[in-house]
Image (cartoon, rainbow, N blue to C red):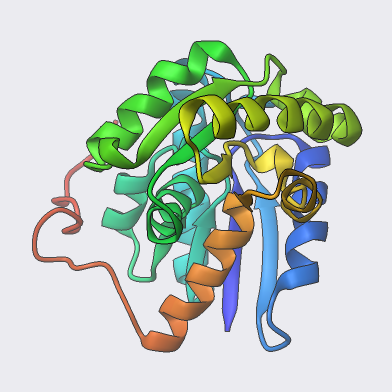
Length: 235
């Protein structure tokens, strides 16, 4: 099977990091292409960044459909443009946030999300609310790091996650920790062994969900929510 992983920001460093981690865990028969947008923000840390990143991301989704890919993964925890991508795609489009929230809810009673910037806490809570999953949410806690720092300084990031995740488990009752940024790809196994709490890497979760969906022949329903957009002229 062929899967395209789209990093919606323009960071070559983060894209390379993501590629290395996902290539390590993909199935032997999975052909993986990891790309980033050629235009847009270097990192996605606000609603403005998300909005700016969506058009080039959608162009990559169209490319994946044209070039015969079997699934697409949007590798940003905000899932920018996910609904629009599903509308225009005939193949599954899996957001790393959406997939990891649902998997976390299958693994324990309550999960906590580790997000880089505290300003994004309301956004994370809103996304959980939109999916009707508030009763699973123990907390959203900030690492007080930039997205770029989570990718560029793994040891500092892991140390901070351990500190914050321990508080989430002890004070908030979190049974599952979700690493809320693609820049933290590959950090989960080490963190889980030190925490003694299940830690989810959303990029890894999304890859395995994508492989399973392709195997099962699953597609987004086109009868309502993800129906193709009406044809019209754009200026």
